[in-house]
Image 1 (cartoon, rainbow, N blue to C red):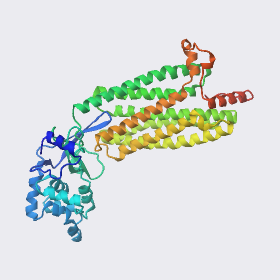
Image 2 (tube, rainbow, N blue to C red):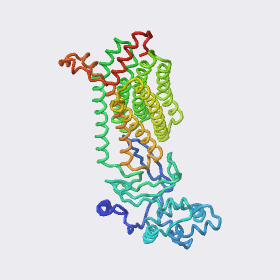
Image 3 (cartoon, rainbow, N blue to C red):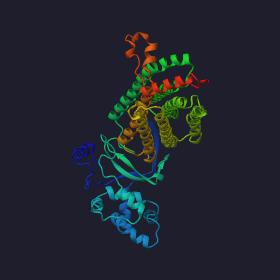
Image 4 (spheres, rainbow, N blue to C red):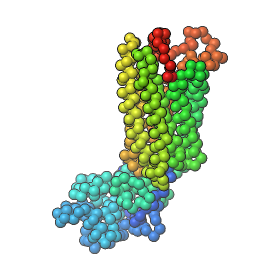
Length: 490
């Protein structure tokens, strides 16, 4: 076609492929083969021409233009109405039958886009809006054809090519057609032209950064939150108080395991994907454990005893974790034993639905707890950390659900590398912030200073800065419990 230097020069002056750009020969294939190896937070798919299946679409279409006495522009833009009037089902069927199965609609669109002088007339009519095929599929393909010179990559340029998804072997793509890229410098085909040293370095830095960040956070939360709380739990036997912080630590450890596996193998296996998904799921369970703990305190203050609803909440949390965290990976592995693409898609949809359901349940539980708190205390709840954290967590859950939904609905194999990386990192950051938020809300300075007495050099005035609302409820609960007896379910 042309060389990479010319493309870079043109890219500096325009964001669109020049309408005057054309080729004498465009070599494509009847079928393509896709080998998926999922890199860190992005799909990298090698799409190769199968042996002995390549052909020159420019020469092939030109030959049939002479036989059919019609240019590709006339056929695509003008003759679809005539074919519909004659009862022909689709433009693709007409082309396939008229050319004895040698060409398809996608071949003619690619030829009109890139081959010879005719491509200029074709592009001019599209820009003028005078090419409006009556065939709806053909119209979508033609008008949706990417024009940006940056569509295939920001540092390595390529040209979009239209293919039927049935032409791609080992593909789990949605829809009937896709735009793949012919990469100029690497002389290869792919969803995007993102292969290169810049991408490798960026991916490596990101992987190491994620692993190191989770390791540091895990160490801090373990020694600043988990160990002090464990010391208090051992004395009070209130083991439920340890669940939120434990979930955060375990979730971060799972993310570390997933990151290390990616660093070691440079790709996603099913095991790696399960660990990464469990990291998100367990962080959400930590959030549920926190709101259930707050609900437990509220119910204790209201009813002067641990109600059956509190016990049901913790039983529900355990059963939900067993189902979501253990059963679902087994089901997915059995359902998609050899299809990594479908396995990945399953988890995108699964995590999106789970996060949204968690958001709904969390909001309902928070509203109920908020209403009971308001009845028991005259403190302005809006000014408390609890309400701020509830709002923060709701936004995070919505962001996680939306991110996975976008990945599931946008065919992640073919969305832009920049968009995919942004969405994936947003999901990772949202999950990490959720875990940090739970750990922050569970942190108790008094527990910390009690365990690490070497830090407790100040007087009691600086020993504890716990939430005013929780302290008030705990004091009220303690006073009421002097006249009530029960076995604490904590």
